[in-house]
Image (tube, rainbow, N blue to C red; front, side, top):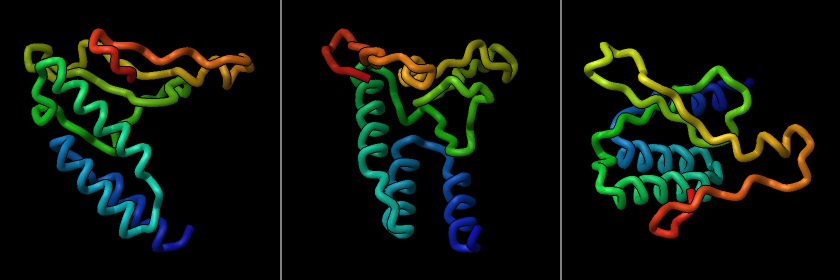
Length: 121
């Protein structure tokens, strides 16, 4: 791996904090590294809007580009809600696995989740 590619990956993995600021940092990183991440980051911003639309303050969430789940079946957004009352232990973990059936040979995808507002995620 070239030193330039390694530097981009390391910079990506350091992005963390307020999701809105993380989005801006990731867009700047993509622009500087000449990566086309617009569709992925637009989807991320749409998700933040949907969260806000449900009355939650998305700025209070914590984004970490280095966060991952060790389960291979997740094919999209993953999360780990935390609770101060749970002494730092996640009460649950969640993720999207819309593409799992296709990866296992299914001919059709799972349809997207439709929220009450009519938006999809």
